[in-house]
Amino acid sequence: MGDTILVTGGAGYIGSHTCKALAQAGLEPVVYDDLSNGHAQAVKWGPLVQGDVRDRERLARTMSDHKVVGVIHFAGLIEVGRSMHRPDLYWDHNVNGVAAVLSAMRDNGVARLIFSSTAAVYGTPAGLSALSETDVLNPINPYGDSKLAGERMIAANCAAFGMEAVALRYFNASGADPDGELGEAHDPETHLIPLAIEAALTGSRPLTVFGRDFPTDDGSCVRDYIHVADLARAHVLALGLSTVDQGFEAMNLGRGQGTSVLEVIEAVGQACGRPPVYSVGDRRAGDPPILVADPARAMKRLTWKPEISDFQTIVDTAVAWRLNRRFGGITTLPAAA
Ligand code: UDP
Image (cartoon, rainbow, N blue to C red; front, side, top):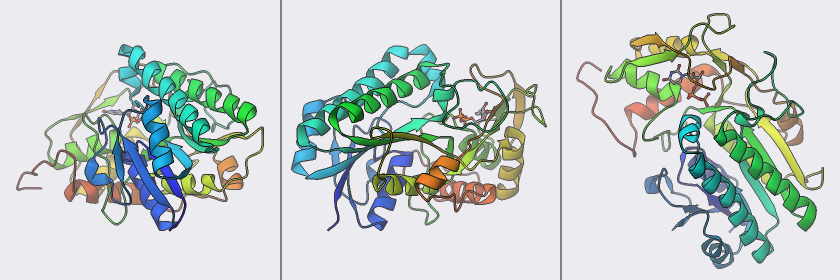
C-alpha cells in the first residue's frame, strides 16, 4: 500500500476529487471532515474520520493512528458573500484550522503540507491582465484575508520548523468527475455554473446575472474556469515537489483564459438543449471585473497543465453530473426535461 495522506475537507467538492486522484496515484487518502458541507457518500477511496478541523488533539491522533506522511488541507469556509456577514466564523475556522493542522503535524513529525488557497488573496487587481504570484496580495473580504493569513502562518512554520508546503491558489473550480462518480453539491448553491444548469433544466430558480456594466467585452464578469479534476491532479503533483524559498511556495491554478458570465449561460444552454432563464441584476459586492490566472509557475514547477479544462468539457461534465448525481439534494426534473 502507498503512503497515507490526511485530507481535511476530503468529503467536499475539490477534496473528494483529490482523494480519487490520490488513489489513482497509488496513495491512500484518509479523510478528516465534519460533514457540515461535505458528503459521506463522496468518501470512496479510504476511511472517513468525522471531526472538527480546529480540534488539534483529534487531528494529531488521526495522524498517528493512520501513520500519515503528508497533509492536504481543504477544510474551511468558502463563501465570499457570507464572510462579509460572519467574519468571526471565517477567521475562526480558516485561521484556527490551519493553526491546528500545523500543530498536529509538528507533534507527529509530519513535514509536508498542501494548502487549499484562492485567487481571493489578490483582491481587486489593478489591471485587467492575468494575475501572477508576484502581484500585490490585498484581499477585499474576510474569506480572502483568512486564507492569506493561513498562507503566511504556513510559510512561517516552514521557515522555522523545516516543513515544506505548497499553497495552491484556485481560480474558478468547476465541472465534475468525468466518470460521473463525484460532482458539485453545495447547499445552498451559490456558484454560477450549477445555478445556470438548474435554471436551464428546471427553471425553478431564475438566474440573476450580477452586473452587465463591467469594462469587459460583453459587460459581464470574466472568470477563469478550471476543471476540478485538473485541480485535483495538481495536488498530487505538489505532494512530490521539492520546495525552494524556505520550504513554502504559492502557485496559481487556472487555465489562463477568461469566460464571461454571458458566455457561461450560452454554453450551458447549448449543453442542456434549452437556455437558462435569467435576468440582469446589480453587481455583487466585491466582484472584480476580470480574474484570470497566469498559471506559468504551476505549469513549470509541477509539470502540470490543464488537460480537460476546455469550457465545453467543464459544462458537459457538470450537466451530466446534474442529470445523474449520486448524492446531495437530488431533485426530480420536470417531465419536459
Ligand atoms: N454570478 C452571477 N450570478 C450568480 C452567481 C454568480 O452572475 O447567480 C457571477 C459572479 O458575479 C462571478 C461569476 O458569476 O462573476 C462566478 O461566480 P461564482 O460565485 O461562481 O464564483 P466566484 O468567482 O465568486 O468564486
